[in-house]
Image (cartoon, rainbow, N blue to C red; front, side, top):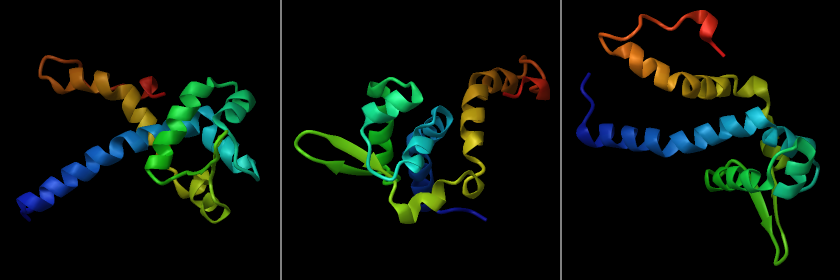
Length: 133
């Protein structure tokens, strides 16, 4: 089955467009940002999350802003503060059972450079299962 050029172009664009939000989502899961949002009944600041999870607020803000742009997290803005939240009706989406493959994103990122060397003819053979994070 041959895909049309425009369809192929759209698929490539979607893959590229979703890569950063996907990596950011995986990062947010790994460091506990999603957990902090799910545990809170009210919107919270990046500083609040940083304090609870022992994270640097600057990076928490950058991660949350990416997830807001990807429409995965919502934001409340006032003149003084920016607060983030996951609406109650969307929280079920972020339960680990509903997105079991988010760990594959970080796993693939860890192996990226190792895989490049293994693809070349003169590279090492395979990736030992014992090396899996």
